[in-house]
Length: 228
Image (cartoon, rainbow, N blue to C red; front, side):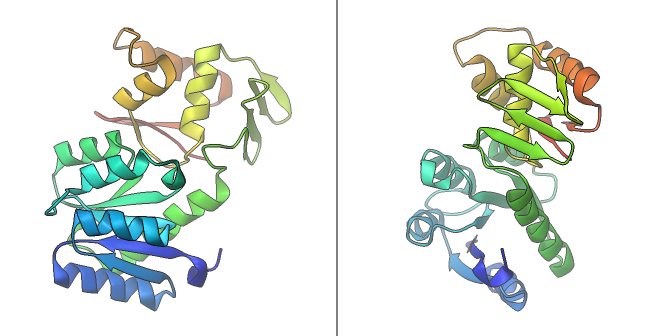
């Protein structure tokens, strides 16, 4: 997808930041829209259906976490990338944002080169990786087939237990996205199931042994992400 085909919604209650981010994205040829609070963001998102949303965490009306939660409750935004703008050292906010479906973080103060680099990287993930609704995910020498519960690496079948497969498929459905431990438990085991704290770690270790160590990255204190 060319830059001029990409729609980006920028949401921040600080006019200077809104103008700064908008200007730098427009210089790169992106279609840029803006909103100054959470309520405006929800209205704009439904009208525009952006490919990517840059969302400040601390805002009036609804904060960024609540906006993200409401967007992720609507299937039309399943494949929309959401990147939070966050002040440094906001660990609690970052975890809360990831827990409701955020894909990445961009720290303030914002540096133009870093901003553009991160946005382009997020868009590449969206293009290269298959979407969450896909039944078959393909990554270079790795294929994950949801319908057949099948994993192929270099055209050889890798035997995974059912929960190992479900965990791998979840992570691979959004390459680069950090899934929190709570989100993984809910999506793979179900919110009503009680399992030990080490359950995810054991399953990840087994997947790494069978598929390769480099696909699943540990994000200390938060969860895991898939990279290729």
